[in-house]
Length: 434
Ligand code: GDP
Image (cartoon, rainbow, N blue to C red; front, side):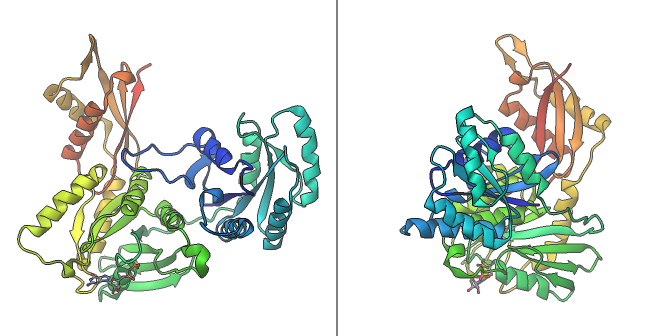
């Protein structure tokens, strides 16, 4: 999916615009409790165009001179984005830094849209025509504080997207290996592809941030493995920040059906791990947790159980994700991986007939009566599946406000008990019956 980056010198309002667009103009997936949202990257839709958006201002380069910082941020935008929104400030006019940025952008031959922020009133909107001299065509007036002009800006952005590639012929299951540096992703990639029953058909460096490898398992199932570890980008800019690594992982997740979330079994779970796992969960991807380097762990009969219990406590929202203890070195349990990926991918695409769903709903309500809040009882009328990837259900109720979290969880668990949804998140939405 196309990538949009917002660049500009500090204080022109990049983050305000980014957050405004993220909040109001595009639909983003819901927050996961306990996961800090990474504020520099978000995914959304405008006029049926899906895209992701980077706020380069959120990528910090500590201890570097002003111009170097800006330069690094612009370099990242040029490297990563299909369309760049170059943001300037109507109140301050064109500054030296703006001109420097314009020169770098100009040489990049990227699609650049010039937006003039803080154009809050008609006089300031007059002044924006000065910005023609930057050489990027018509400047678009916007106001981050008032929210005006954003629709026109997004129209211009999507109009510059590259033509969509039609990959409907591609029947392969797309999966990525995600995890912080040194958990063993590259080693796992090599071990999976080195399995004798795997036939690698073609390797292509299709994207800016991952190497895609197509392979077929012994049953004839096709897979595309998205390997972010295979690309180590040149230079300090790319390794400079943890945020940047997180963003790259997020982009691989966007392109995946199934995410293999790799944890270092000898080292345990860290904060950065949780962030990326939370993103995969919110994006509705099927997830398998791989506890790697299991060969290094001194074990007795209880070790696996204890590790599992601890992990479940740390990643409660991933309760549906199978955990498998592997080793890239000894190849322990790697043989069963393609089969597991296939299973969770099928579960993620499972469709249940409404008649069957409503049997489950009736039974659920009989087991646990709906909550009654101050004399108002929740009534549930009808349950239907509206989407797959992930399976998404709508339940029609008398009053969505009465549909509390605990009852939602109860119904989701009833669905999980009744059908095989292991490995995939489930969404349940309450709607008021008309
Ligand atoms: P990446 O940064 O996630 O791609 O991690 P690498 O694949 O580069 O692995 C980091 C280090 O861990 C390397 O020294 C690997 O040899 C080692 N390693 C990876 N997987 C395993 C494993 O299953 N067992 C052991 N003992 N070492 C491993």
